[in-house]
Length: 115
Image (cartoon, rainbow, N blue to C red):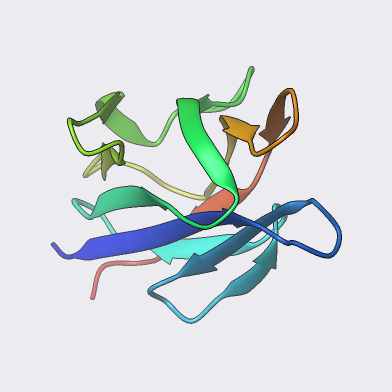
């Protein structure tokens, strides 16, 4: 088990969601972050984002998370990948960005084989 961090910010030039993860991926809301069974995924607020209001599996997805994805006191969100998870998962990040209305994006997590 390890911790995978996803930094959630807003591109100041385009106003679009920008994600950077501890696995070396970076880009708009369509990046794919690699995870393993039992990993803790942590989403961290970055520049240009006032608040993450919800992180949840996308409708119709298999839900690779063990239990709920929860917000902690510092404004970060955490979820744990189920031991039996397989494949990839589209999830929804709902957020409020500076000087903008509430928005949502749908990046992906991909479960890699056991290490």
